[in-house]
Image 1: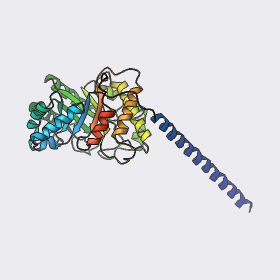
Image 2: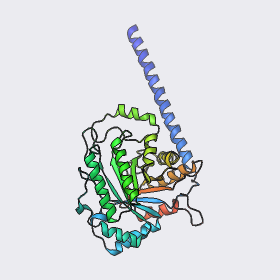
Image 3: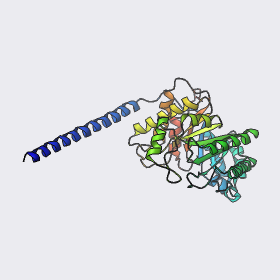
Image 4: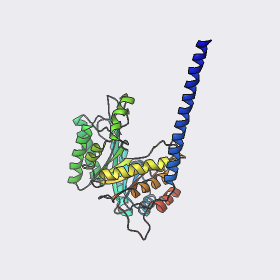
Length: 351
């Protein structure tokens, strides 16, 4: 009986301890959510910029379009102050080439852009799943593959594209082959007076989390522990690229205020880190992510503006947002973008 009583007493204490722990954690979560909600309420003071990017669907280079479609697209770009369009022109084949049949309409597109959207830079958006640990599609560690990638880049520049926009995934901070390709591509684009831009994953909250990612998510496939750029890596890329677009979307947070905090935090951190080195575009989504009640274009834009508010000074180089993507952005969303992001007519545009 005494033994049973002791067991019962220990069990009771464990249950009480578990209950208090759960209550403490729930209270902590409630405080975080309440604090984020309060922080989110004031209207941001900062307005956006007139230097912005748009990712565009492959059909623009792969399929023919009528003159009215080109004219309407050009008007959309001008009305929304889009300065750079990343036209999906790939992906690369495993050998570093892109079949000409995939971009058979590219020359007509470039001519139409010059006619209906003069001054807007058209860049060839090229990428592929990077081979890591033997998994993936394109092996950038192979010098012959890198040479064919450069030859493909040159072919797109010959067509009249204003730049090359890379999106290789995953790219890790120790990826020397990727940095070699960036060096070689910069030589090519600068020799022709064109641009080199690159899309990268959002950085981690702290560089010291990279070893944690490695420990928790081992390299088992083409996408393993999150390919988050460290500060040193991001600065190194910024020194090689004319533009860096941070893919800040897919936040997977449960409330709008937390999702907004995510965009604000990455805006401030990225602009403070590389805003004096290169043009920065903070990626904002117009598609419907998994948690669509928390993340949308309005939340992202408001969050970016809050991040700009937190800067001690404006970046030395232009900055803006990169809208992902043209095929998912409705007219209503474009209207909200203009009303909440673009500078007011009486204001001098930032960036």
